[in-house]
Structure formats: C-alpha cells, structure tokens
Amino acid sequence: MENHVVIMAGGIGSRFWPMSTPERPKQFLDVLGCGRTLIQMTVDRFLPLCPIERVWVVTSEAYRDIVREQLPQLPPENILLEPASRNTAPCIALACWKIRAAHPAANVVVSPADALVLDSGEYRRVISLALDFTADSDAIVTMGIKPSRPETGYGYIDAEGEGEIRHVRAFREKPSPETAGRYFREGHYLWNAGIFVWNIDTITSAIRQYAPQIASIMDTLAPYFHTAQEAERTRRLFPLCEKISIDYAVMEKSSSVYTVPSDFGWSDLGTWGSLRANSEKDTDGNALSGSPEVKVYDCEGCVVRVSTLKKVVLEGLKDYIVAEKDGTLMVCRLSEEQRIKDFEK
Image (cartoon, rainbow, N blue to C red; front, side, top):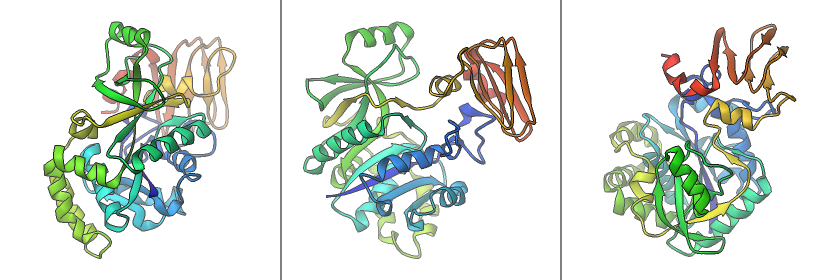
C-alpha cells in the first residue's frame, strides 16, 4: 500500500489571539521561534515516511496562498480548499474520497497542522506501527498519548488490553479535575491527540455506514475530482455536508477502533499556557520572544510574544500573557486565558 498523509489546516486559532488571527492563524506561524511554522514542522515530520507528492493539505479557500508560500514543494493539486467550515468529518471525507479516486490502495495518516511533537523519531515509529496494522485490516487507529498529569483540557481514550496496539473501549469528553485525577491514577486512559490512521477502504466504508449524508455528497462530487469542474462542484456541494467532527460521526460509533499508547512529546498547543510549557524559558520560567528586545524585571511564569514593538519592558508580573501583533496588545492573566475568544470580539 502507498502511504498518504492528510493535514487538516483550516482552523482559525482563536485562542492565540492577537498573535493568531483569522487572516493568518497559528498553524501558519512560527509560534516557537524556531524558524519553522507549525504546518511546516508537521510536514517535515512525515517526509521520511511519505514523499511530498502524497501529502495533502485541507484548508480554507482563504489560506490557499499561504499554504503555497509555506509549502512550495507541495503539488498545487494536493491543496484541497474548503469553501465553508464543516468540522473534521467532511474535511477528512473530502480528502479521502479524492485520494481514493487516484490511489485506491492508499494507507492514510490524518493529522492536525498545529500540534507539537518533540520526539519526531518516536513519532514516526508509532505511526509506522499503526500503518502496518491498518494496511491489511479494517481497523481504525487513533493515537493515544500517555498522560503526564491530570489534564482537564483534553478528551480521553479508554483503552483495554496489553501490548502496543490496544482496543478502544470508549471515548471520554474533557473531564472535571476530579475525574481527570481518577483517569490519571487508573492508568488505562490516554489523551486523544486527534491523529488517525486507516486504509482508504476502511474509512470510506465507515463514513458510508455512520455518516451517510456526508458519504452521499462525496459520491456526487467524486466524478469531478481531478477535472476542471472540481473546484466549482466542491464550492456547490461541500457546504451541504453535515457539520460534525470525525469523533462524533465515526470514532464513537465504530467497534473497530484501536489506539497506540504513545510518548513522543505531544502537545496540541491549544493554549498560551501550553505554549509557555513547551517554549524555552529563563530561570524564572518566563517564555520570551520579541523583536528586537524584551526585558523583564521581577517577572515569573509569563509568556511574552511581540512582533512589531521597538522595545518591551515588563516589571512585577506573575503568570501573565503579554501578546502583541500589528498594533494590537493584549495583557491577560494565564488563569483567564479561556476568555481570550471574547476579548477579540
């Protein structure tokens, strides 16, 4: 089987405002200050497993030029444009139906564009393990992350069995602090990373069974893939898809879902707090990035990201976010970062 990679890159990254904006969301930013954007780092991780010709990016029409700019080696026809946001099930269906039209024996990895992976070698090892497992079976694999702490910000996978590949008993929503503590103590619960592996027949059959409305639209669209009519038909038909996540549409309904308990330094970088935790820090726990200069005095546990200010001086802050971009400045306690979506309105 041929390995293919689908990268979902349509989100607007509203929790990282003002650094991330609808015009250029976080997957297209160098949020770690390492010289590579999150989507570039995601592609880099997969290239030893899959040539760039078999990498597919699903994104909004508004981000087509950014994808072309940041991934110049990606074939233009491998950029799939969503005319409307319909959540992950239609996004994945669009990519998998198109891949199937030209590669009916494909084995597919689906990944978000904006996750962080610190150990790329271990990541590729467990992805390869999952690809071997799905190549000749009807299994769906979702990558599970071994928890390092009781975490209320992630969904969980309830896994059963022994060995590297385990059957999924159930998916659990983001828990309360008490429930997260119990999950952590019991040891068979994993964080849900939203990274999936399956062969093309398995996922298209599962979507037909559990999300027939989406499958019907993809079947109508399929004859136009790789033709001059594809873009126009996609604009017309894709917005008709039910707006639903792949978790609700397929994963929670199928009895053939497995997981690989993994530890490759994963974070979804979904909050300023997670960005601070995964960035280089000074001796007082401050994660600082700015051009040209950020100075802090008696500050502790802060995350600072500025891009256009000449100089930033901070004094006496503890556990604060200081973020600036294009003339917009936000200063917010880390404990209140869940309110950021409201601040930008």
